[in-house]
Length: 495
Image 1 (cartoon, one colour):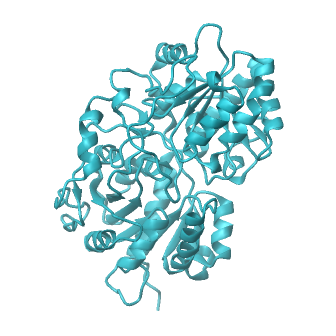
Image 2 (cartoon, rainbow, N blue to C red):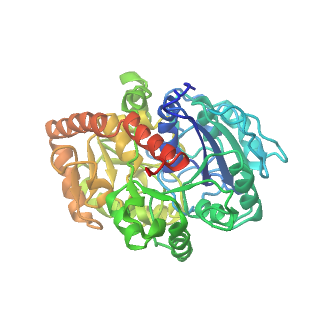
Image 3 (cartoon, rainbow, N blue to C red):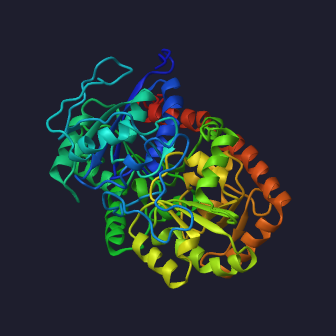
């Protein structure tokens, strides 16, 4: 980690994420860590996870160099079941996470030693091993860690965070508002200059630990990032209601899209100060991500494994299988697409609570043989590159990282006309956009793109240029570091 100059003091930031998988917030932080280190920001990541709540096992991905772990092969009508159940998480995002070569041991609330001014103590106490981590380590060791993996163990992404210069702690959290999580955040905050939370539960637990409360004067400044607020289930509606109340106590509230910023200002987040609600977009090191695809041979080999004789073209979806993602609309659009392209296949990479319902829908529609259920993906860059079109039929998004990843590899894109997608692409120039919940329009746009390879190439090329210009990590990391310093070392008022 680089050493800060006297004019740019070091800041120790505790990032807190409550998640059973590796989703958008984790991936966004991983993209920023190298740039934050260059800015002199020392990061410690506290990951709260619930025992047994992992996504798919990573074991079946072992030995498939530059490839994917596939739930079904070409022509198969049913996917292999994951070794553990997938669950919905508040504020969950689509994920393409790195498989770790080693796991972290869990603590029930390790306190961070203050250590040197610019760093945290890399060693944290280990009260009890994490059950899910211990079970996943041997599988993770046999998988590829060079690129992104979907459905990694709950804390497997911490290995990559450590490689990027952060220190990490994994805490077993019984949830939904566990005392262990509160204690862990309270203890860890003692060694931090600032606390930065990343989801509903992390916000609530940090508040319970003292964040934003005048009665806990020793608690450091609190920054909260809202990646996406949704109300698609009763549980999420309750979390959202509680979160909006506690976010009024945050020093600053960040979000990844302008529409979420407007919502937060209306809800009087950060004490009702409109200037304290700020938009910080997700970022991606596009060249690094794209290079992980493994080159044309790896991409072509992957495509060959996904398509049987006479099959194609190939559509790709990567994300959580939740209603928010609109995969049911994609399935509704498939019959019209297959009327024009009878061999068309859709690769669905992801896990989530809608998995069983979507499989039932596919069987009912007679589409089972057209679906490749990729519960696990070892190389998302290769998968996005292998598809003829990447599909984002979402009903709601913040700023989906899979969108930026698809742009990074120059993949032709079709998305919906929602703010989280429309902010990053231009309809007809870097992607095609269609109305939400409109299967007819989605089918028409897909047929148009598949029938016009020149248009597809033009969109993909323009998107690749745009993402490198607008979403590079260094600029956002510099803004974030400046914000951290302003909160930790506020400028003195002139007298």
